[in-house]
Length: 240
Length: 234
Image (tube, rainbow over all chains, first blue to last red; front, side):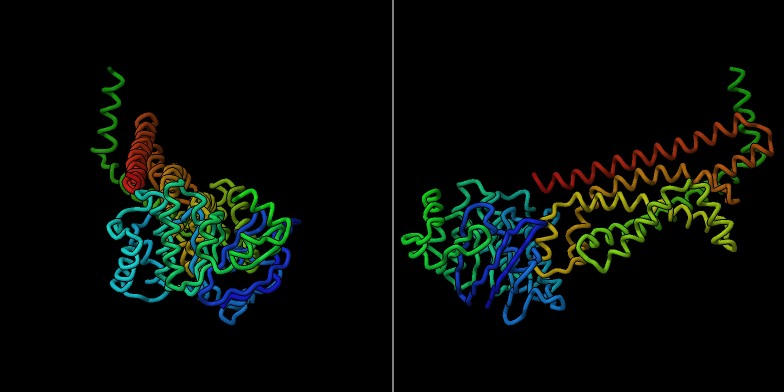
């Protein structure tokens, strides 16, 4: 579904990603872990071209997203993204947050879009907040809405950029629960996270990034219980 | 006391008995027409420049256009309004009427300032908003229209109000190109009556009142905008 070929990203003179290649298949839940500054977020943001790679290819459903002539907007509709800072639209109600893009881009009628939004909102337990504004919600609630906003576009893959890092500890669980539910339903997910418990429980594959390369990868068992490289061992010793 | 009585009598004589209030009113109308027309042109130009420059940051195709915008801003800001006005009247738009020239020249002048106001309003909106819009598959322009501008308005509107207050006063030089706006009208009345005190005092009072009214309206607007924002937070 998503094929990353020798991905490179340089900011000025700094090499953030030094040739990353991996394949994400339908139904995969891939968690990306690694020390800060290892390029995890940059890697994720390159997948939907929010960050323009300086080298390599991103093949999504057969099309190379780094190709200049590709219709990036059409492809992004199929790649949902959830941000660390939620990035809900503060001037819109929750319902408007959820229906604007489907109405504009997928030509859904207002009624269709709202039905879908309310159904999904109900599933994350926030149906009664549809007419509130984002600022009236807690961080955890906002992030659940942000997940729903992405889901309303019916994406083929969901990208999560440290979705729980900006949350108060007591709200982390509610967001992770929604993500677990999503994984159980078979959604393809790429998750940059510091939540090792979540990664171990939900991921079918872990990528350990260090210094802009995949330093080690494997199943949660392999990565967490039998780490091969010294780099990963010392990282796990610090976070577990 | 004598002074005020005499002032009052002269005022009544000139403006009421001799009917010159009509000139003042028609002058006020022209002042309003130029101000509002120039404001509309200024906002339109400013909006286009601001958006071009916002997008030019990561689009090579727009770079020449952005450069042109910079030239425009620099040139316009570097030339005094009166000079700009006369260039338009005597060189560029020779066959146009004074009031049309006024609207266009003031509009082009104010566009250069609006561009900066609107740009800083757009920049005040969190960067993540653009990313969120783009990640959903919206184009830059769609995100700008639906997400960024509605939020930027909160910062931009008060600034435009301030610009409008400056603009009203600035139109007082439109008389240089034979537009009978309110200043020019009063000057004509003064030349006619040789009465400086009454006419110029009235002129100053007229601008003062206009500015006070606009300032009040602006305060009201700002309060409403911040109330809207607060309501979303409560």
